[in-house]
Length: 400
Ligand SMILES: Nc1nc2c(ncn2[C@@H]2O[C@H](COP(=O)(O)OP(=O)(O)O)[C@@H](O)[C@H]2O)c(=O)[nH]1
Ligand SMILES: [Mg+2]
Ligand SMILES: [Zn+2]
Image (cartoon, rainbow, N blue to C red; front, side, top):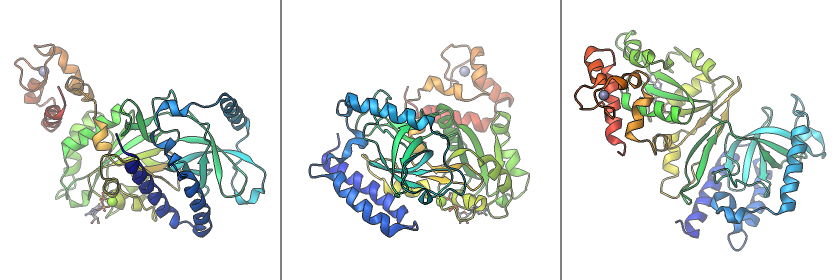
């Protein structure tokens, strides 16, 4: 259980991260003043500000009148036409309150930034009557959420409703273990970036990410970067044959020579893509090649910033010019396999799963039993040794 002190520090860290990003925005001085006021009032004198962080359900009970109002707001928002057309800037709309649909690109406690029709993200408060009750999640609004926002051109909006999430990357809440905290909502696919060399391709890690993607219902894409470092240009394709044969899409790239960048750009277009991969494989370089100017805060940086046990993981959606977003997902490696049991593992290997029926023992682990059809297939070369070795290593690490 976190103390109030720890929660306050987390709160402050989250706000500092948000401030840092906003500092780079155009009208930073004006926003800064407003934000400061808001910040003080949020904290209050008795630390009342932590409701979106992790207060238990009982404290989230919404007065009946509020519920009705929320429903009315939602209905109003839903029935309003898509008002944000190109060329119709937020500032130019006078003081009439309008409702728009947008995507949350960043979240701090009680505040978020919402991207509406490609315009510069609007700083928004979150309607207090919105509740995460009965969702199994602790956060009302997460990065990636599609929301309805009311605003009147004053530079500050209000989140009035959240659309049901298509998907959620979540992890057990640091404060309330029975609930889960959404890290990013509505992610479509996971781009697993590996380098062919420097650092050398690490099959076990690729497979861990593939499993994490499958468990979170994200479409995986393996991106093998630094193909320019291959001694023989045919090497990377040969090395990735086991994954291609298992049905996974693989893109071969070089941020250095530009090879495969167009293909990567197409793969990212119009979708929300989470990024995974070791430090140094070239994630930042690839994104800079896909879209010059894009400055991804990479997960290794974020991991360091949010070190410690009681932390909220902050992610940011970065819009792409061709449509779609990329998002850093600190910690996907840890939470990707949490709760997975050993006997479920084979199910994530399309080339291994169908063989299990033919093993001598029904509960065969495929690691040492006699009469194992999987081990036989490996010896015969029908299952790639590199995939089987990764299976064994992951198996060994999972709880029985
Ligand atoms: N040879 C080669 N080097 C690359 C390539 N992509 C990135 N690098 C280098 O690899 C290092 C790490 O790249 P970076 O983008 O920071 O990786 P990140 O940690 O995954 O974001 C840098 O020195 C890059 O210049 C590539 O395609 N080929
Ligand atoms: Mg980087
Ligand atoms: Zn077996």
